[in-house]
View 1 (cartoon, rainbow, N blue to C red):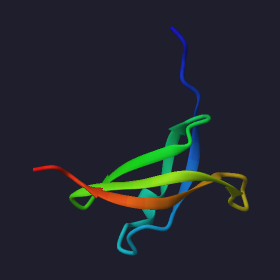
View 2 (view 1 turned 180 degrees about the horizontal axis):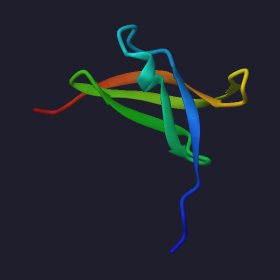
View 3 (view 1 turned 45 degrees about the vertical axis):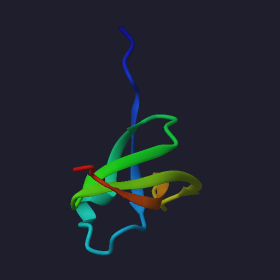
Length: 69
C-alpha cells in the first residue's frame, strides 16, 4: 500500500468571516484544488504559483457552492 504524501497549504480569499484556523489545510502533494465545507456550503480554492514567506503553497478562493437540500 502506498502512502499519500501530504503538505500544508494556505487558503486565501473567500468569506471574510472564515476563521484563520481554517485557512491552513493539509492536502495531498501535487493537488491543484481544495474544497472546504464552511457555513452551509463548499468553499473552493485553487493552487496558484505563489508561496507564503515560509514556503507554504497558496491556494486562492475561486467560488462557493451551496449544499443541495
